Image (cartoon, rainbow, N blue to C red; front, top):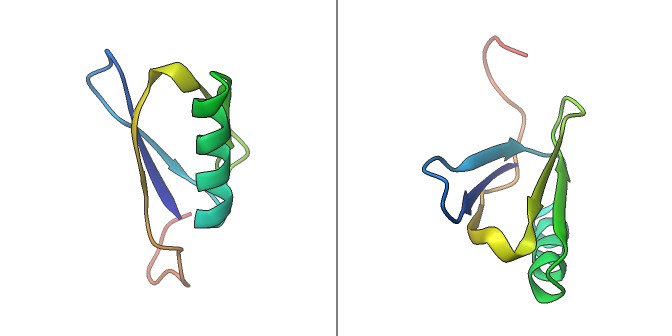
Length: 73
């Protein structure tokens, strides 16, 4: 699933492709915002993105990915 995160005072949004469900992502985001913690997301390739909860402007949680068609990896 694609997750787009707007960070305050940053011109570009952060985009993460994750294997988490929408419910799991929402829970992590809510926890990071409510306790001014850090949002930690790991993408499909094992890269981890850390964003301070206090700096999250918005989070767009896309539809869960179904089987992809075409070339790429």
